[in-house]
Length: 246
Image: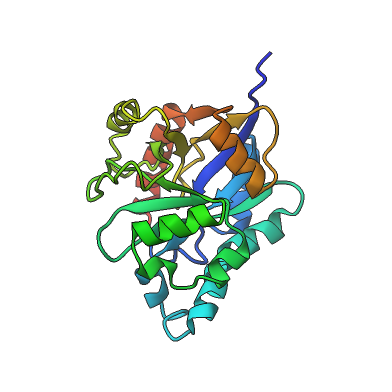
């Protein structure tokens, strides 16, 4: 009997916030993840300067920008109701380079009280995350354009990123993680579009229903990584076919 049976997605975007790259809405996210047997999804919309250059956000105050940022999470959570656990996270990128960092464990106040966190750097915001009992994980560290981060800044790395159209070099990330035994290892589909099916995340013994529980489980190491290459390949084919229709 497989005791690790509850599936959690750790990397998913919405069209409400990640407007320059994502097209999936609350209905699609909820129904698709339920179809693929997930019990929990962490919404990790892009938190960076470009996010707020969209006409819907560029004239907002700093606090209202954070209200805008929370819209994706709130919409998915409202639509899902009690059918799917929807947690709040973030994928933040700073002005200094193109590297991305996943924040696991924040509540809404974390963003509303620190609306300029994306304008600092990995040191400042990483420290902020830790002071708020959050985890600071580098996403797809070996994707083209990203730079490996100092090991003392981050809690771990995303060793499997299932985005079908990115050169993530997941195998290199897996090998790199072996150098740092303390690292927390994560996996995420990095889902942006409907044709890209959920193909990653973690398996746990119990459903993850809160951010506190998510952080505790990731720290404990009591989980298994999902690396569904066959579904990723199907998502890539479906995405390419979909793009041809646009």
